[in-house]
Each structure stands twice: as C-alpha cells, then as structure tokens.
Image (cartoon, rainbow, N blue to C red; front, side):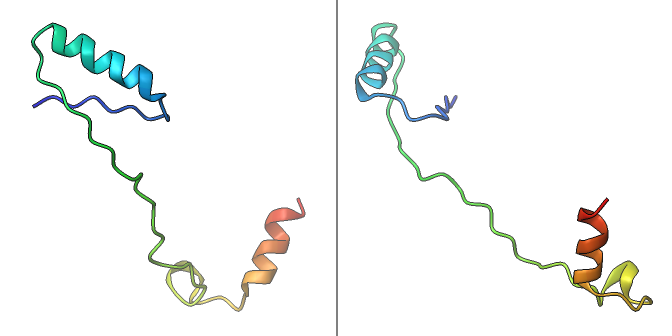
Length: 69
C-alpha cells in the first residue's frame, strides 16, 4: 500500500477531483481523515536532576541569566 498525506486542509472539491483522477487510471483510492497527532510533553525539566544536582541554583536565576544577555 502507498499512502498520500495531505498536510493542509484541502477543499472537498479538490479532494474529489484527486480521487476521480486516480480512479480514472484504475487506481483504487479512498479517503481517510484522521486527527493530527498532538505532541505530549511527558517529562518536565527539573533542577534536581542531571548536571544541576550539585549546584545551588534555581530556575528563576537560570531564566534571568538566559534572557538578560
């Protein structure tokens, strides 16, 4: 099976024209509409893990240093 993914909202008349064109070439085509997948952020950054575990620093201080350059 080969899939063609249309990433933008396409007018129904254009979709119908595409399906009719494919069927005119004896290509079995069907339309499936799916909801876009939402990215889910599962883990939050914490200062108590990783490279910051040995330092006395908080997230506000990091934010200030990063944005006030």
